Image 1 (cartoon, each protein chain N blue to C red):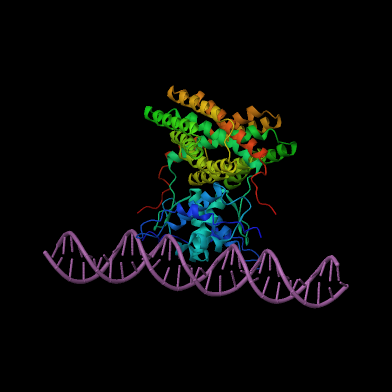
Image 2 (image 1 turned 180 degrees about the horizontal axis):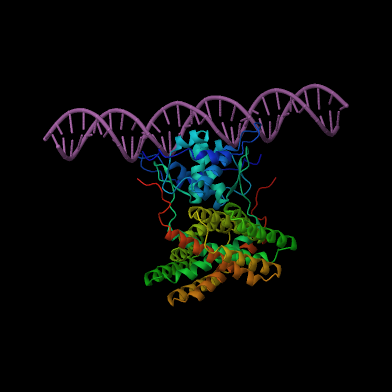
Length: 246
Length: 246
DNA sequence: CACCGCCATCTTGCATGCAAGAGTTTTGGC
DNA sequence: GCCAAAACTCTTGCATGCAAGATGGCGGTG
């Protein structure tokens, strides 16, 4: 009964499928499946609470159960799914507590990234990050949501990578997964769009002047502000987009 | 050639196998396999660089390839293995760069834990942590390495859990895996044993007096000192226990 | 003698088969 | 008519089979 309303939302996702060269068709099914499923969960195509039936997924993704099972295990480890023994994996809920927890952790992680980045940042890096900043400005003026998202994430990732700290990057990617999910879940723009862009400018300034302490502080504030407002907007919109319920 | 010197090191690990009641023998093979393999890697039974042959592992663990494959995927995600397509998974090396990276990240994570813990700590918690502290003292006087390790980890975990921040706990567990690996890899005691215990005392004091800032600072210093000394001792002992090489 | 290419074997990646646990429905008894 | 128990079905967990890529040895050739 609860499975009827899928107007093949897979189609759009399946379009993302690399569809690689026919040669060498071994060794990528697992990662592809993980990527597709992850996208579906992060973007909300698979809503929180959805039960994942392995056989269905097999048919929809046109693969056998083995890669699907492995993907489920992987995504469970990432926290996107919850699995109980002998029971279907379920898309995890966006727990408000967890989102608040996320704020604190991402704040210190990106703050540390800012602190460490200063030691490695080059003029070229500053230019690249500046480019991303102006891309965001452009997307802002054009009201292009996905483009802004993408540039924003690239902006932050670039700074995190500048830390030259592999563990930091690793943890950040794990956290970013959950942040992205929350962002997609609140389908509308954050009210602090312009503020965010101003903060990005401050971050860029701190990078150019190689002011590590200021960079770290600015990033911490920026992250905390952004995520707090995100959580707030999610709480207020607390069921408006839960279009389906039984 | 390089695979000859295994005097069935599995035996000790297999002893850890729960060997559950014959009834309900379904649904635990995967987690058990993960746990066993993880233990083998963290404790160094499986040395860095070791190739993991699936069939061999199946025979040794008496399970089929499916749970073994899933376990390998899981541990790869945890960073304990490196997997290349169409190639055996390999136990990852303890990259010195990565260990240095680990220091910075664990420092801010445990620092944040200290900061947050104050808001939740009760007298009972203080008592429990104090108990662990004195257990460590006891193990110290008795020169009991594994007991000290265990109590030390419980001490830190308890404070991390006091943060009541699920994301923080999750990340900490991921990081602790790598820290443990490094600890086991340097099989000897850190020279700063007594210092560590003194620092634990300071942490305990800060907890009792509910001094959040001091707790955070003390924990940061303690973690940084401990891990730095660990990395140093690993670098100096940089090949002494690499008993086998081709 | 050295180097290149080919064949045998091994190993992984994926598909599928089978059994056990859980939920559901139906049927029998009260 | 209602409750309970049994059987059915559905779904997952694990085992195994099969094919493609990789490795290593061997022979041929320059």
